[in-house]
Image (cartoon, rainbow over all chains, first blue to last red; front, side):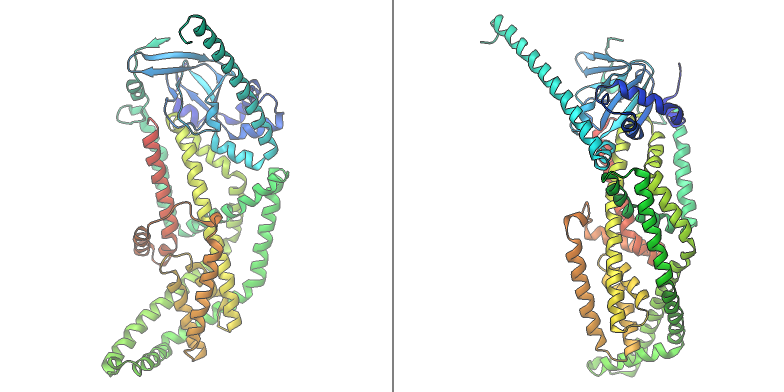
Length: 176
Length: 366
């Protein structure tokens, strides 16, 4: 599929895609507990974009503005260093999301993400989210609570991994 | 495509949005050209520009109210209809109750303008200068006095003509109230959607920056315009009531002029005070009214400063006085009196955009 991302984004058929966006949002754990009318509010603030294979979504070190959800195609998460060049850390496919920390923190991106193949991506950005949360505090609480739960789970998993790693290192007498 | 030796620099070059490196990107020149042509056309239709600006100001005032109702659990469209109905009611009340009074004041002002242009103005100025000549020796020469009367009369007539033209140009816009009301409704209902449409035309590489920057610019400008609206509204009400109470003719018109002028930095008080002082002296034949007006202006200015110094009304950033002065002079040179009123808002808009672009250039890989 040879498609120009600039024209594809300008002339995308937004009305046809709305239900598809809601369907994709339902696949994301962050939004899985929201009902259809609540998902519609998120659909209203979402931006659908078409990315050509190899086109960057964002670069490492850029200020985080929002999160992305892969609707179609795939996205590569990579680290680019002068020594090793481009190193792919993960490939994200339909329903996967990335950059979600930028929804609450403006800190720099920790990795570069680029379209692995032609991809349709949904972007949700912090300024729109903040406005939505201010207008709909109940929906905001629900979303933020879910967000915190997922972050908590991730923290527990990281802590567990950290602990296991430490144990292994202790066993091999690397740290005492 | 697991791991390749593409460095960040070389990869970023492939997607840099440069028409020189990638001729296909030249097509972006079409929307840019269309934007420039629209701006040019807009400058030709100044009434449209005025309505658009007024609609933006009113939207920035009404939108937080719609959000507040939404926060209380009312659905978006219901909240919009409620606030819009309230706005229409106020507009209707304003036209019904103040319309006839404003029309009468404008007729009287036109008569006064005619009588002042025909010599009685010159006579008043001559009396005024004779009064000062009795206090200051160097004015006691008939040649100096004649020259001064001539010069002041010319300035006075020019100033008065400017004031009358300014007031009438606002009143000309009253038939456009329907267009204004419609524009406000559409901006309230579809403003966010229009913003999203604009963002959808931006290339991927600029998406995050555009989202962030437009939101920031919109927030800054809305806060600024809202603040200006509240200042104009409250000071106009204060001045009009005070002038009415003092028995100064054209209380609403000069009150509006003084209120509108109060948002102009440095010269605002002067621009607002001179017409009031002239009208006061003309109608009272007693120069002591000047002291009363001076006290009134000082009191209202003090109240205005006290009211709007709170953090919620403060400007998002400070404009250096020198820049303010430059923008005021440039505004006056380009658009005359209207330029003075819109110089600072346009400067705020301009600086806000430049700041965001500068921030984007530093932080994003364009």
